[in-house]
Image 1 (cartoon, rainbow, N blue to C red):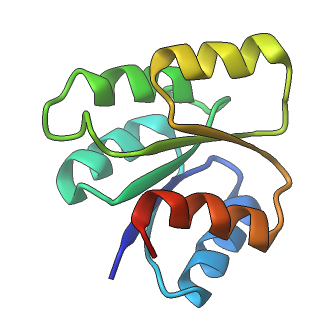
Image 2: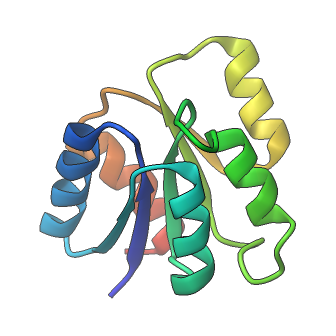
Image 3: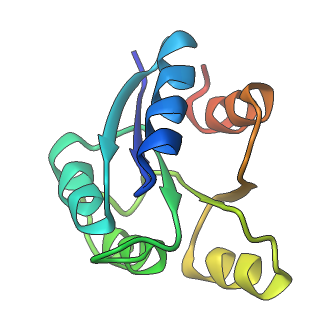
Length: 121
């Protein structure tokens, strides 16, 4: 079974996203902030990471930078999830090495299509 790490500080969004993914057959690990997400990524090596940008302790940009510096996590597909779709923010995310960017709120089909693209599910 493929594993998705969801890094999201908003409890409702985190739980709803995890539930949607679980109903589609994914194992899901959740983190409430960037520091916890970074730790769980190193420990579990998920098949894909879905990460918010604006979070306490460590934002999503810093999470991705640190994942890319670790040979254990450098190749994990990384999807940013954010309510903002400003071109400069999307461009910055992609320059850092994100594989994709999804706008919140997202619907189930949009999320599954994107996650499945990186997990071959």
